[in-house]
Length: 473
Image 1 (spheres, rainbow, N blue to C red):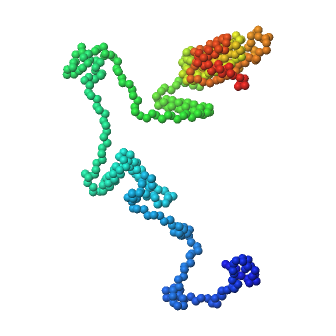
Image 2: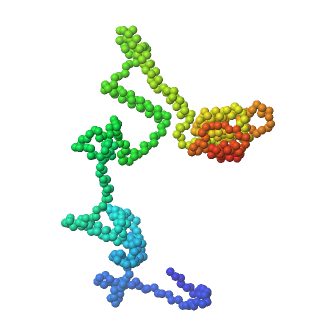
Image 3: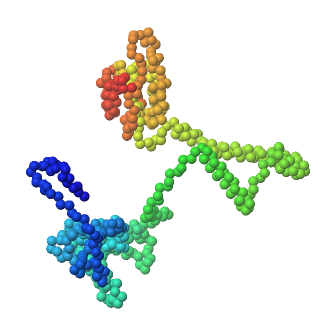
């Protein structure tokens, strides 16, 4: 599409001085009439001289997406070099580079590629042969296997021509030499040989009779060579309502089984529980025949049931030793616990006799070990034991004892002193205890007090208590 130059706008031509423009404009003339269409016998277009006119066929303006993609692919076709039939024949081809010759020029297809049966097993066998015999021998072995498989597949193959593979030689354990006498007979024969035995019999004088006893020697049992049983699943935690429902179901199931056994005659039915209040209901007309005898039987049966109930309670009752063991289990931890809990307390003043007595006696009653070291201006108490005992002792030291009122009578009107208190310096667990029992020590100097802890191998307890400040509480 273009614009014709209007001669009235001549100054526009001189906008660019270096450019020469034509002053005359030739306007093409329109054809006066339509061209004549001439066709030959074959229907081709010809000119007035009879020559065939080559007319370019216009392309279709509307087409499918498949045809468009095909045209683009043909227009932008990538030219790739042609490979040899077998790249391994090329001396410059190196398969160690990890290049797969079959996938070198093949485009990646986003489709499922199903693996043929036996592909991975063949590759594993090839890798095994390569690692065992080397690369050259592995190729040779692979070729032999392929040839052997091809021979087996043929229907009319002679089985004598099939190559037999090499057998794997299993190294057998050398057999033990036959001893001159078995070890179980050597302890019974005096001569230590079978020379005294003739035709399977021997004289009793040649035997060691003291070795023959009434005991039978059994071999040590050996567990069967089987895999251990899997661990059972963790039981489900039930609520109180579910536990009650489960107990009811078990009780009903037991009662149902009992009734079924009574119906089959396996067990005797229980006797009716006749009492004086339900005498006429249970026995009916029989109660009026001999009431004295029936009353005597009913009272004896009731006494028998009561005595059986008392006997069952006595059988379930714990013995004094079992009661003592149950109480110890409730108060103390198991004796075979791995860890030992330790608590370190710091007290400003432990001069009160009653408080000192409480600390000592409670430690012994709770089966705690440790020591209480009383020094000038500071007291350090270390206790070791089970978790339950340590908790009870901590309540005694921090809650039950009122340290503000635990003073001597002569100090009640004394000088101004810091408030008496007890603080927990450290609490934790150790592998084993450092003390054998609980003892109370009074030391004149800090060096003597520190030596008590150093002898037990826990001098750091003393250092913790000395360097402890009230800001750390």
